[in-house]
Length: 127
Ligand code: HEC
Image 1 (cartoon, rainbow, N blue to C red):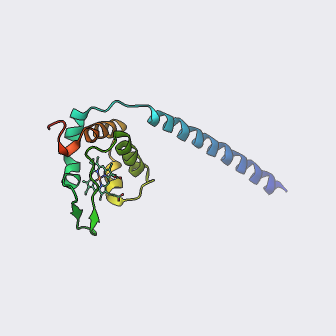
Image 2: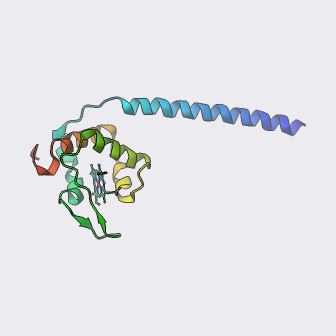
Image 3: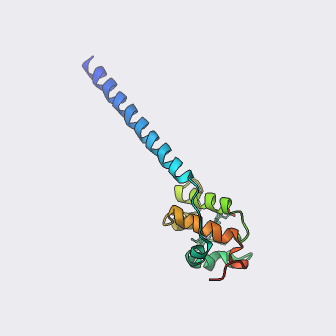
């Protein structure tokens, strides 16, 4: 009997902890959802490390396997930003992009989205 009571209490506190974690997650996601103003000029500089892969239309990477690299220029900024957030959170599973997005701040994502939304490597703002 005693052990049931103890187990009940334990489950209760675990529930409370889960609730707390959920609350925190919701709070954090509402912070992320705040519109950040991206600066395309900062985005150009940040995009230096992206253009090695995304700079060439129709380019394919050959390692670790052959895969196509999507073109980013003239894509909707919201689409770029949400794609990067999805890689960062693990919702999108491509390992290369996950590793890259893991190091991007919300501001960096906004800047990159603004830059690519303006045309990215196909014109727009010059580095
Ligand atoms: C090593 C090569 C490489 C680098 C460097 C790289 N990417 Fe990518 N990126 C890819 C590949 C490959 C995909 C397609 C992944 C997939 O199929 O999900 C991709 C997908 C994306 C997508 C989703 C495009 C779509 O149409 O869904 C975005 C946005 C993106 N990358 C942004 C960036 C940004 C911003 C940077 C620089 C901070 C960057 N990438 C650096 C290879 C790269």
